[in-house]
Image 1 (cartoon, rainbow, N blue to C red):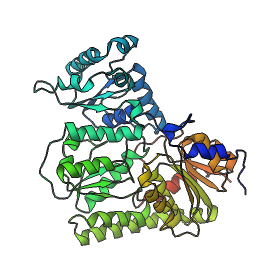
Image 2 (tube, one colour; image 1 turned 120 degrees about the vertical axis):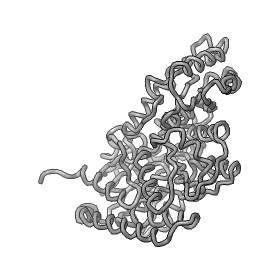
Image 3 (tube, rainbow, N blue to C red; image 1 turned 90 degrees about the horizontal axis):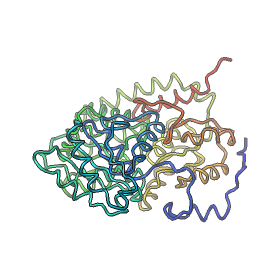
Image 4 (cartoon, rainbow, N blue to C red; image 1 turned 180 degrees about the horizontal axis):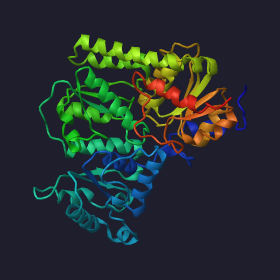
Length: 457
């Protein structure tokens, strides 16, 4: 089998690919939205938070429904969609300023809408015209008003990945107060609502496992604790960053402000091997009863491998040692490659990391994608979020399975490969609380994958 090289990667493509995305003349269908979108979705993922958009009317609509449609319907919250208050800036506000409009919007929102925490999320227009958003918001920081914070998230401040960090930054600086440290309490950072399409299932999975070994997981996003989860952030004994870079800024700031130590586990732990390493890494930093930890790991490993045996015949008769490719954000890409290689015996040909991680962590990501693999080959690794350049990269390789976003689904036929959506955007599946992480997550991945090929003989 050979790849269909209908697209040739040219010297000009190499030149453009070497540029920082913000310096490129054009990008085709990048896998993110603007900083406002990331902050907005993060705010709506906390029950009890009421966002107030200070932007044009289309910003909230396009971002919310864009994320809903592109994440398998993975949003929750009290203040999203048509219920989101917005200043709806028009041409006259560009000329005369939008501060008075924002002032009226905050006042009416607080009067009409329920919320334990109000969050202004400002877009490009107020930043360009110089609105003093923080000054307006500060007028409502009085005892007679509910709590309110301001996220400076104009679209040109970065991507939706940056918006997640900007939201956490505003929460830490403007909302949190010191609390006594609770023994065994941990925060999970780095799993971004919607941008990571399995975020709800993953957060529940890690809470179940960490609580099972005697810890207490503070549910920040997607839980039923509302803003209490935010308030409890400073009480944590440890912050766990489940990404090579997302959430790292928040962890560093929390360490500086409250002295909370943190660890970085780059890549989602998938399958018994990686999940065991993850839990033992966490246990090294906290007072975890060793016998309880060992018992949980042993029990869950046995269950996972018993279930794996049920599907192993299909794996080794239909996909024995096949080559595969991955197009995904860094934490999902790392988890998939290490699981499929070390637990399933598949062969990684190429990995395209799509979340544009900072330069200083790219060596770490590459190391996790190429070292510690038990297969006979290591993949080539690229960092790219331009869909056109991604597709041109893929045509250089031969593989039988493609784990990617929905945007690679129809192109997969050019590569003569089977396709399975595991990253943003995901238009072709519905995800409630699906997770591929943890001891048994890999089995669920294989179940979903093989379901695509099941048919009557």
